[in-house]
Amino acid sequence: MRHLVQRVISHAWAAPACARRFGVGRPVFACLAIAAIAIVLAVPGQGTAADREVDLQLVLAVDVSRSMDPDEAALVRLGFVHALRHPDVIHAIERGPLGRIAVTYVEWGGNYDQRTGVDWTEISDAESAAAFATAVQLSPVFLVNWTSISGAIAFSARRFEGNGFRSERRIIDIAGDGPNNVGPYVLEARNRALASGIVINGLPIINNRPQANGYPNFPDLDLYYEDCVIGGPGSFMVVANGFNDFARAILRKLVTEIAGLTPPRDPIQLVAERPRPPCNAGEIQLQRYLDYGTF
Image (cartoon, rainbow, N blue to C red):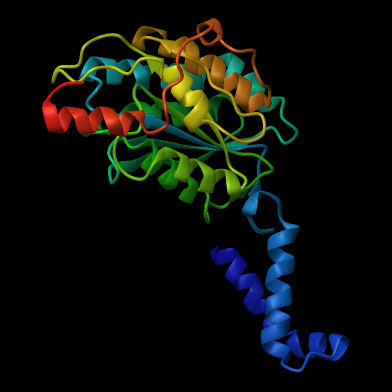
């Protein structure tokens, strides 16, 4: 945004010439408007000409709510670290038209509990990927209450603004083990992100382990992610069958989305006749827990 403002201001000096050319009565304001529109429409990926062009801008947004215990949270983070260093991920990046992507790592929980673990970083080879992975690994542990996918999407969407990069593709990668249960409804946040040209992919973690506080895990989380979380051209999800399966799932997912592919549906998604949960199912579940202590 800073670069955009600077470019619009620079066009003010050309306003009288613009007015003479187009016969506009109020040259400065009218020509500034024309300049601003031209700048925004001319640049893909909501960036500016001064921004660094990459093949993909990717927000890795991972759930760190207390539905996970510390060991499970560690498995998730280690899965990211190993995937980012994997030769298949490096190969997918290097084979892109420009051979570079921009990535940031975000952790989230409740409606107001999001933080940037590692800021935007350009990755173009094994060395830069390893440096980003190390930064993720060393980021402080952050565990919070409740689950706000809507808050995570809204926070992640803002991360694209003025980040110094531009690209044709912008993706938010949501990984979590439960549905939205606090904050705005997930469809509201998802639809706003999709309207701005952002694609949302998902990695639901299917987990049957009872939580320490007695709060239940969510059945059919994969169907919930499919109907309520992911969206946009070419969007997809990869299901992790438990926390021990996360490393496999995130590796497959990163390679697929960096390469711009759409994978076939996981076998778990092909089970017929499963009831599809509504997109406010998490809010309903939480309200029952708060009102009656039951589900």
